[in-house]
Length: 88
Image (cartoon, rainbow, N blue to C red; front, top):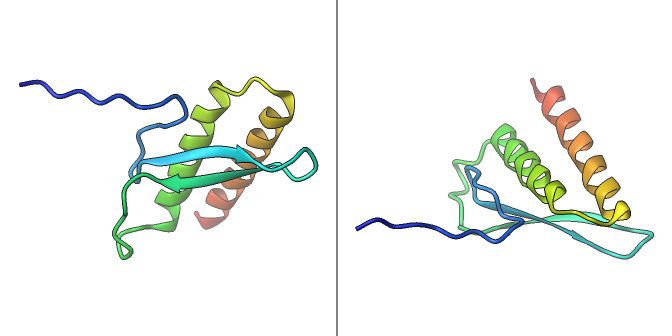
């Protein structure tokens, strides 16, 4: 028996199965994250979490059509990459 998984558009496979979404109004647009599965609290490495957030944002960026949302997601990716690079 072969099992298959179907993911909605803004979900990407990551170590923590993380979803990125844009939320807020025009003046205060932000990216929020949601864990699809409960990760074990002791196993989450900060660098792995940043990588999962970057991956989820890059997937969200593929499906973003609005210029305001696109700039918000791009800014979030830049900030996450800078934080990841500072940890190295």
